[in-house]
Every structure is written in C-alpha cells, then in structure tokens.
Length: 86
Image 1 (cartoon, one colour):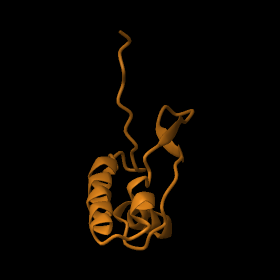
Image 2 (cartoon, helix red, strand yellow):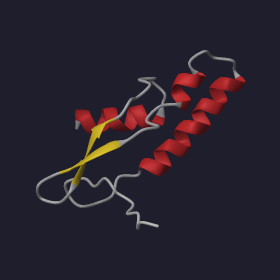
Image 3 (tube, helix red, strand yellow):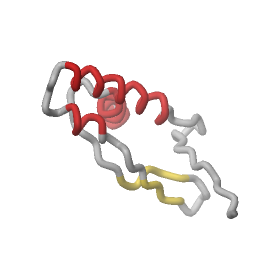
C-alpha cells in the first residue's frame, strides 16, 4: 500500500488553516437547517466537500478549486469571505 501524505493548506505565515473545524461547524449548521426543513440544507451540507490543491513551485500548496454554498450563515463561506476581504 502506498504511503499517503495528508496535505495542509497554510497561510502566508505558515500557520495551517482550520478546514476540518470549519467543516464540522458547517455540518452542524446544515443539520439545524434540515431540522427546520429548509430547502438549502442539502446545498449547505455539500459545501466545500471537495478541496483541490495545487503544489506551487516553492513547494507549498494552495487551494485551487472547490465549490461553496454561498449561504450567509455558513461557517465555511463566511470564513472564506473574510479571508478574501482582508
């Protein structure tokens, strides 16, 4: 069996980004939406399920492609929006 390496997305200061923590918060939010019978619960649950990273020439990795739900209260979307705006 081949050795698998777990990739981590890091910011410009070398600190790993908390994708797992944000996804767990997102799933909790999707569960609340499904309890309330909102139609967008399925869309929110699938937010950022697939993360594709590219290896840069300097050896670091950068998020290349993903699909977000764009919900105003989604923890993942809010986090990415705040990173983009800052």
